[in-house]
Image (cartoon, rainbow, N blue to C red; front, side, top):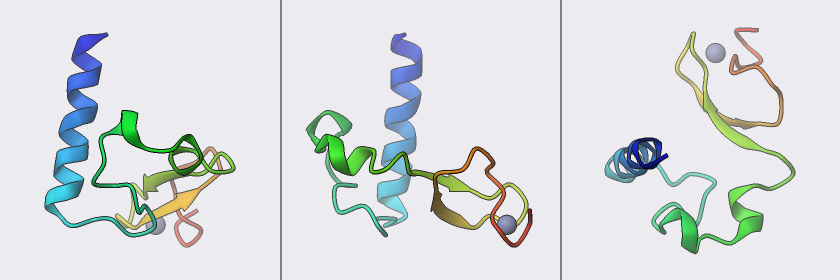
Length: 69
Ligand SMILES: [Zn+2]
């Protein structure tokens, strides 16, 4: 799906512009150059809480942070 790929790259660029590299030392690298372990460690994923906008790492299915859950 080329369209989806394009979108993901845009998100990456946006994150870079905001200087958001907290917790991800490979944020400035293109996804294909990141070590697999860093891209997905213990099933953790970075999410933004839809209610308060907090960005955090979680391995849960919900995007809500612990404060808003
Ligand atoms: Zn929240």
